[in-house]
Length: 232
Ligand SMILES: *Cc1c(COP(=O)(O)O)cnc(C)c1O
Image (tube, helix red, strand yellow):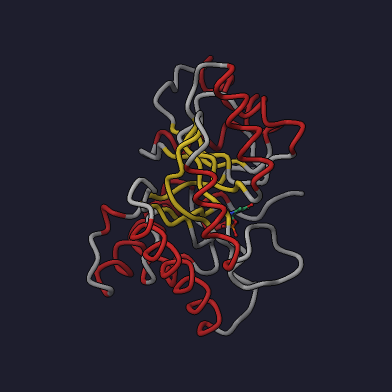
């Protein structure tokens, strides 16, 4: 591993190259640097190298880091909550977030809607889809998504900006490609049916972000390739 700045540069170059090979504009892919478990000093280092989008998977870790950033004068960070929200904690998520990536059931959407309305806010969200169908994965089943999107779009206080998924941890690139392709087709189908739905596709992590970029990702969530191995 190099320094955080070198790692960022290399990840951005790989995104650029994957986009170019797919005939896509690399500007259409946003890199979310996943800083979970790492200290705030590493966020500062990445910020110094120009990174502005940061992702955390737990509110308990995200909120103190947002406070630290504010205190350090890093006021233009775009924060992404990429992990699941527990239903009794939705109120904690009504903070200035760029995007909530992993709304995995209607109960969460409904509670976010209620809490956002109470606070006079509107939260941008993605619906997480369990494309691979693994029992261990969160998210809407593809076949229930149509109805769920219709309901989520009718909720005030949240804005459905698109879809998110996680590929299975496998070596076989074809399997990963099929999962990302599946999410993209779901997005295309739903956006045709519901023009008010956003077109974001959050997919791709350290092991598979180039496949995701080739497959149409607009947001990739990359941690280890930037910050190194996680401690916990
Ligand atoms: C931790 C995490 C990532 C980043 O994982 P890496 O393999 O370190 O890039 C991406 N998405 C989610 C939802 C995560 O929890």
